[in-house]
Amino acid sequence: MDPGVLLSLIANAVNSSRILMLSMLNHESEMQERMLDCGDDSDEDLENEISDTPGPCTLELLTVLGEVLPVPRRFWAWETSTDWWDRIVLQVWDDSQWLRNFRMRKSTFFELCDSLSPVLKRHNTRMRPALTVEKRVAIAIWKLATPDSYRSVGNQFGVGKSTVGAAVLEVSKAIIKLLLRKIVTLGNVQAIVDGFAAMGFPNCGGAIDGTHIPILAPEHQGAQYINRKGYFSMVLQALVDHKGRFTNIHVGWPGRVHDARVFRSTTLFKRLQQGTYFPDQRITVGDVEMPIVILGDPAYPLMPWLMKPYTGSLDSAQELFNYRLSKCRMVVECAFGRLKGRWRTLLTRSDLSQTNIPFVIAACCVLHNLCESKGETFIAGWEAEANHLAADYAQPDTRAIRRSHQDAVRIREALKSSFLMGQGTV
Image (tube, rainbow, N blue to C red; front, side):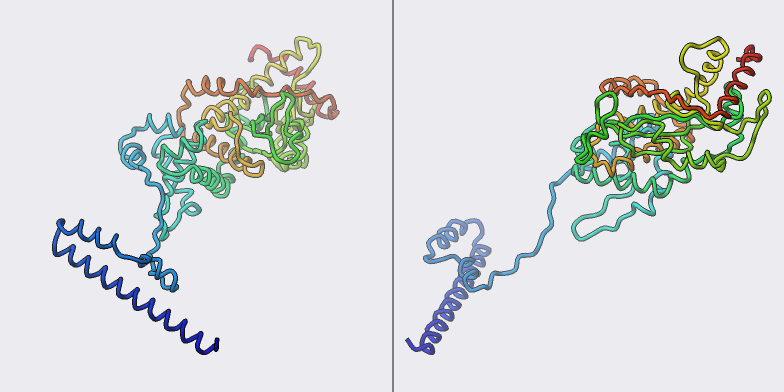
C-alpha cells in the first residue's frame, strides 16, 4: 500500500476516535446536568445509561490517544492524633508530671528548647507542617528517658517511628554542638578542691572512672566490642567534680579496650601530663610537693597527678588511705548511677549505628549536668528501675595496673602518713 494512503487512513482513524471521545464527554456532561436537575430520582437512570454505553470507557480512549486529563497531586499520610501533646502535656501537666516523664520541670524543658532552637527550628513545606522545636525535643527526651520502642514513642506523640529516630539524633547533635562545651566544663577549680577537701582528700580536682554502655553487635569489628562480661558495649569515661557533675567526658572506645588505654588516648591525659588542665596549685605533704590530683580505681596508672588505692595485703595506714580515696571517688560511681537512672536508654542495647551512639551518650551527659545544675529532683524509684534494667549488663571488672611513677609513689606514701597522723578527722 502506498505510504501516503496509509498515513491518510491512520489520520482518519485518529480523527474519528477524537470525535467519538468528545461525543462521549459531551454525553456525560449532559447526564450530569440531568442528574442535578432531576435530583435523586435520576441516579438509577444515569447509572443504567452509562453502563449500557457500548465500547471502551472515556478514560481508556483518552489513554490511547495520550490525552489523559491531569489529576491534581495530593500528599497524604496516615492521620495521627496530637491531642495528647497539645492539650494534655502542654496545658494540663504540672511540674511533678514533667519531672517523672521528662526528668525535668517544664521551665527547664523550655529553657533547653530555647537554647537548641537555632539548630532545630524548621520551616513548613507543601507536604506538611514542620514539627515544632518543643515537640521534637520532647520526643527525643522521652525516648532517652525510657526504654520504650520507637513505635511506642511515635504512637504517644502522633508521629511515625522514623520521625522518632530522626528526632533523637537531631536533638542529640544539637545538644553537643550548642551546649557540650558550655555545660560539661571544669568550672571553678577552687570550689572543686574545697569540696573534695571537705570530704577528706586534699588538693583533689576530680574523680575518674569508666562505664560500659550496652549496644547491639556492630557490623564491623564486632569482637572488639565484647567486654569481659561477654556483651557488646561502648566505653564512656568521665571525670566528675565533688557534686557528681561531669567536667570531662570521652566516649566511643570499644568495650574490649582497657580503661587505662582509653584514658591514655584522651586529650585529658595529655593535658594532665603537661600540667595544663588544672592551675599550678601545689601543697606540701610531708616532705614532697603535691599538685592538684584526680582519683581513680586500680585500673588506672599511679601518676604524680593521679592517685589510686593500694592493692594486695594492706596494713592499717594503707587501709585508711584507701578509705579516704574511695569515699571521695564514690562521686563518680554515683554520677553514673544518676546518669543512667535519668536516661534509661543507656541501660538497654541501642539500635543506633556505632557512629551515632556516641552522640546520644554525650547528649545524655550534657542533660545530666543540666538537671544537676538546675536542682532537678532525682526520684528514688529511678535507681531501683535502673538496677532492674541493668541486671543483664553487669559492669566488667577492671584489671589493676601495676606500673607506678616513682614521684607518684612518694606522694601517695606521704598522703598515707598524713592521713594516719590525722585519722581522728576522718
